[in-house]
Image: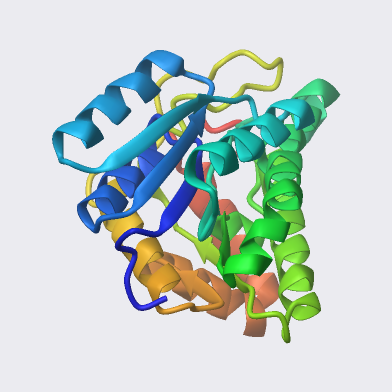
Length: 271
C-alpha cells in the first residue's frame, strides 16, 4: 500500500486523541473513513469537519466491548463502502491505581475494551482484509513491552494485544495480510484524563506534565506512514525506544528505573 488515497480505513476510538488525529490525517491523504466511538456527538463533529475537507467519512456509534456492536460496525461499513483496506484498533482506556486497591471490575473493563474490542473488530473484518490484502493495526503502548506499576490492567491488555497480533501476523505470512503493532510512548492526549481509578471512577486531571510529549498529531503521522510502508512494528519517542532496549538487556535495572520514573507522578499511588 504505497498510498492511502481512496483506501477504506476503519478506526475505532476515533472521537478523540490519537484516533481523531488519524482520522483527520487520513482524510487529508484522501482515504474513505469509517469512524467508530461511543461519543456520538464528537463523532458527528469529526465527520462534519472531514466533509468540509472534501473527504468521505461516516460515523458508527460503537462500544467495542460489545461483540454485537463490533459486528454491526463491520457489517455496516461493508454495506456502505463495499470493502475494507485498513482496520485501526485504536479504542482504549487506561487506569492508575495499585492492584491491591483496584477492583477486579476495573481490570475486566480494560480487557473488554483494549483487548476484546480489538479481537471482535479484527474477527469480523478479517475476511474482507484478506480479500484486499489489507492491514490490521493495533495501537498498543510501551506498556505492552514493559509492565508499568500502577497500571496492571492497562499493561496486561497491551501485552495481550501484542501477543494476539504477533500470532495473527505469523498465521498470515503467506496470505498477504499486513499486521502492524504501533507503540506510542507517553502522548499528549486525553487517555490519562479518562483513565480509571481503583474504584472505577474517572481519574480526572492527568497526573503527568504533558509539555514536550509527542502530540496526537505526530503519533498519527507515524502510524499512517507505517501503514503505507507495511511495517510490522513501530516504537515511538526516544524514551519509549530506550525503555524497550534497556528492558531487553538490563531488565532488573529497568524495573528500578521505571519505578522511580512513575513514582514521580503527581499524587503517585506508590513511592
